Length: 469
Ligand code: MLT
Ligand code: ZN
Image 1: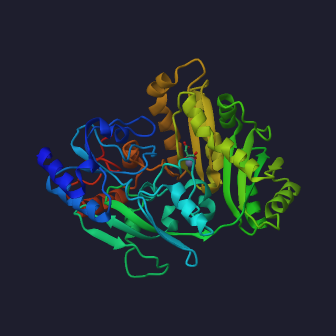
Image 2: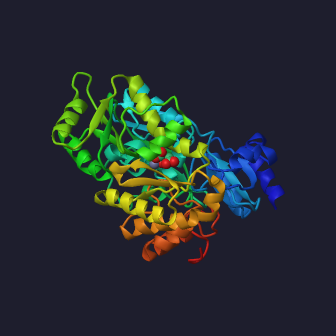
Image 3: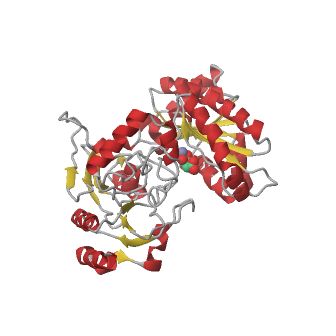
């Protein structure tokens, strides 16, 4: 069956675009090296018509389809299973920026455009695409949409759900849902695009989108020390108020997380020494220092300890580099048991403290790397092996138990076990455990309606059957 299917697929998208064997290797392992799949083939369509045709062909042969973007996800959502029967569909050749309309503040892009290329195209027109994250050089818009990416400026601009006006999707039966609209107002029933954003490719393949843009504005950035994690929220509230709501990013970092950066990249220096740090960025104007004024008023009110304001673009980049070096520092030290929880804003500091106490009570010698987008209630509470214990060994022996503690605490505080990195394969069991049963049932109904043969990214997001873990 698969030989004739592959022959048919070659006819549809070109023989050179149906990869087999070793040529598939780079599509078969996820970014973190947690998932190793084996693909029947990697398909590289060059147009939406080709995506639709290959979907129809795969469905007629009962071949599972795994949409694949920049392969930067953390949960295995874009990796084939080990059966060798699923086709990976890479969107990398759909890499054109279609239009940028500066006056309307919109752009339309194909799904395989990297985030950095989309940002660049917007900036060439004097506009800002505000989605930004460490992986922006490789991650693709289709993946950003499929995981409802948030990144570093959610506080001001929201996630991909908020940034998307229109979407084009190839459905599991090969029909093309053309909702590639730039309308900002359209009250004509269900907002179907939202169904596919964050669906992790389980309901169809996103092929293009219309995104919102904003006026490009200078960014001003400062490094702030605070006395305790619970000082972060009052500081953020004051800065938002004092700046006319110009805060775009507000990133919390514990001294222990930053210590990992200094340990692994000693050429980097911390601007301040303190137990708790915040990187704050604001929109500014060249002739007006909103950031400095807001910070000095906050300091007068006793809301912060100390401040270093970036005096140049180079300094601004250095401050961001410190923040963005935390995940790679963990990786260099053998990796961590990673978490990506969110809790209501008012509970962030309490979560950090309760989590710290609970983890250290059971594993007193671990190293903690706590940081995150606290302006969004999103905390990365990562746990590293004790210094005298191998990282892999620790993760294997204690990883699940550590995660149980941190996820159940987030759940008890009315939070989420996955604030930004999605579910994929890694967190399907958690979705079963913590998801609302009615919401889960509706998700299964939608999946069964749109993808009755369960061929669209099978086994991702929803466990194939029942509540087994
Ligand atoms: C981040 O906040 O840096 C990203 O979510 C990546 C990570 O935590 O590893
Ligand atoms: Zn994050």
